[in-house]
Every structure is written in C-alpha cells, then in structure tokens.
Image (cartoon, rainbow, N blue to C red; front, side, top):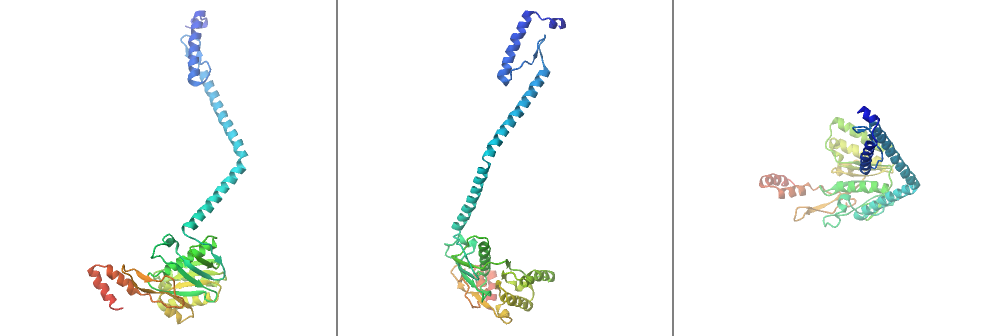
Length: 333
C-alpha cells in the first residue's frame, strides 16, 4: 500500500478526484464550507489537521461576526441614546401623572389648601372612599384652629373616633406629599412632624417607662407637630394617666402644634386643664342593630361612650344561654 500510495496511476487519481469532488460537494451543501478534508491515499483517510483548521477558522469567523453585529448595534444605539433616554423619562412622567390622576379620579380626591388651621369638610377615610355611594358611609367635618389647637374626642364605642384620627393622618400626610386628599374641601397646616399613637392595652412597668421616653420628648422641641392620641388611658392607672395627659395638653396648647386625643376620661381631664371637648353621639340601633350615629363630631359636646348599645347589639345576636348573661349586664345600665 505504501508503494501504491507513492505513485498512484492516473486512472486511480482520476477515481480519487471524482470521489473526493463528489464528497466535497456534499460537504459544501451540508455545511456551507468549501474545503478538502481528505488525504489522497488508499484507503482514503480524513485529514484531522485540516478539520481542526476549519473548526478554528469558523470559530474565529463566528466571533468576528458577533463582534461586528455588536459593534453595529452599539453604534446605532449610541446615535439614539439621548432620544431614548428622553422618551423613557417621558413615559415614566406620563405613567406617574396617569397613575396619580387615576388614583385621584377613582377615590374622588381634591387638592387641599394650606394655612394655619385644620378644616376638613366631607372628609372620608381612603378605605371608605370607594364605598362613597353606600348609604351607611358618612363623610366627616372637623376643625382645629390657632385658638383651639387641641381637642378631646369623646363618644360612642364603634362610633368612628379612631377612623377620624386615621382620616386626618391620611389627609395630612398626603397633603404634605403634594397629593390630592380624600375630602370635599380641606385646609391643612404644614407640620414638621406627625405622630399617631394607636390604641394600647395596659402596659407593664418597663413598657410604661419606654412609652414615656417616646411620648414626653414630643413636647420638648420647637418643631410644629400634629399629635393624634387614641385612648391612651391604658398606659397606667387612671389618676396617673390623667395627670400625664393633662400636662401634655397644656404644653401643646402653649405651642404651635396641633392635637386630638380620643378618650373616655374627658370629665377627669377637664378637672386638670381647660380644653375643647367634642363628641360623636350614638342615638340608638336600627332594625339591623347597627349604631345610629352621626360620624361628624359635635363641637363643645361631651358624648357618652354608650357601651349599652354595643351590649344590646350583641345580646340580640346571641344564643339563649349568652342572652341571659347579657340581659343581666344590661339591667345594670
């Protein structure tokens, strides 16, 4: 074979050429590459070095092609970079304004005015704003001024005192963010700080001290604050709570801050300080045992908490065994 391969006859060479050319044609059709991977010898063998050369060449070509595509894309993108940034900013601005407009429209929000008082008309908690047409949903009117910058809020259990505080908090924060608010009309004072103390249960000694360390420093700074306190009488025994809160009231009155305190101990506080007392009055229960109540507080009106109405509602909805217990409780009212 070695002798044959060293000096192939012309006819054999022709046969080799025909076969190799046919295979090269097939390779070109299958791969798109035009090369000769065969060694002219008998029997025919594959030229591994040629295969490796083609693989390396094609790999390099592929990388060069990818680089050229990336380069072309980068050049084209760079030419529209400023325009693209501008259009993205316009889309973001539109999305913000459209979302804000949709929110304001959906919740029927209105732009507030700013002044030296708080004056809300037809205000509504955001959770109730989408149920504005519900006959049981009531808007709220409320006012605090420079002369009456703090008030006690009294009245019926489940009458809407906590909701009023949350509504005022929402409106104050939204107004200071530059947003429209959930009210027919709203005049809002700008505050440096807003505090909302929610209802708390009785506290142990350590927790009571921690609470005082947070609560009392509020009145020691000159910043203008809105302070909303929801039934803090549980912080300690009644007499001590009255003394703490009445002192706080006096210091708020002497400042440019505003405050509302929801409480069931207004009579006790009035013995220690001169303060406006507002009330939400419950007049009874309807046929479905829901409270009949005007959610807008009456100014200068000490309202009762009327727990007997809540007891009566529970009594009417209880089974016979529980009714006997609630009936005995109601006899004492």
